[in-house]
Structures are given as C-alpha cells and as structure tokens.
Length: 139
Image: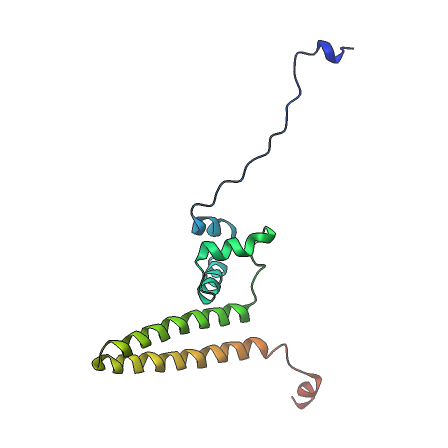
C-alpha cells in the first residue's frame, strides 16, 4: 500500500461557481420560463410601475421568480396593463387638442370592451370550480 505522503496527486479542491450577472433580463427569462409566463411577468411588472429587471430582482429575493401564475391572475394582470396603456393614451389625446377628443373617446370605449371581455374570461375560469351540489341537482 502507498502512503499519502508518497502520492504525487494532490486532492482537487472544489471551487464555487460565481453566478453570472444578469445583463439581459429577457434572455434570463426565456431560458427559465414559457412565453405566456414571461408575458404575465411583464404585465405584472408594468402594473406595479416597475421595470422588468427591478420586478424580477424584487421577486427573486427568495431565489426564485413567482411560482406558476394561475390563469385568472394572468388575465387580470394582462387586463390591468392594457387598461393602463389605453387610459394613458386617451388622457394624452384629451390633453393635446379638441380634434383628438374623438380618438380619446374611442380608446375609452375600447377599454370598456376590454373590461367586458376580461370579465367573461374570469367568469369562465371561475365557473367550473364554484359549482355546488345544489346546482348539480337542478341540472
């Protein structure tokens, strides 16, 4: 048997891998998440008024981004982001000149239709879960 003193090889030291800085947040997200989840994360960031990287940094304090988001949450986040954009555009049109007021009115009407469509989606998503035994008896 050889003794360790005569051994020519030194044991390898384990080195820690330093995490790479996240220069491109969208690249990081595309590696980890599906396209639909990325859209929801982006919508959630815009609703909160944060940049995408700030939102991801804030949510990743626990080392992970949000867990998979429910379809209802995704729909509501998307609605809020779209509404914020539409209302901002309508407000800008109202402030600019009287000729743009018709355009602003159309954007506000579009926002109302968007709310109605989203409400229908949310109702459909909630409906199967909220069915009770009394409803089954009536069917």
